[in-house]
Image 1 (cartoon, rainbow, N blue to C red):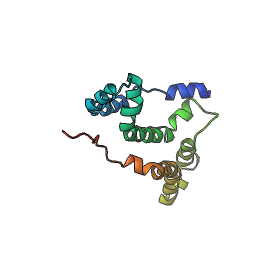
Image 2 (image 1 turned 45 degrees about the vertical axis):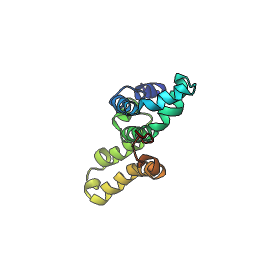
Image 3 (image 1 turned 180 degrees about the horizontal axis):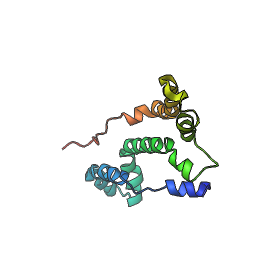
Image 4 (image 1 turned 90 degrees about the vertical axis):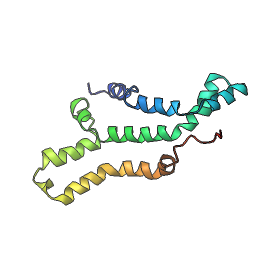
Length: 143
């Protein structure tokens, strides 16, 4: 309770719905790439890190962005488990809901609070938009 180590352990669940996304991405890679690398003398780890992972890096970046947005907008964890370390999302929640409910009746205040939470997500998207918008085809083989 109220410790960063516990918070990180709670957030490091790697097996979730994204497992199925990665499974589908790795199954979409043609076996010809792996077979060609094995024929050239590459081992299993070399094939994984030099052939397969570069082909799915766009999907990995997309999952990272989705996961970042999920963690960034989570104010419940700050309220329940980290009360002495509030997040920015909790601060916006506190201002909008608890501190001044009548002040937030104006749409301009709500939009300003939403933009405060949206700016880091927009910044990440602007930085990585080329990688996220790449063609997701696993092309390169001609049959």
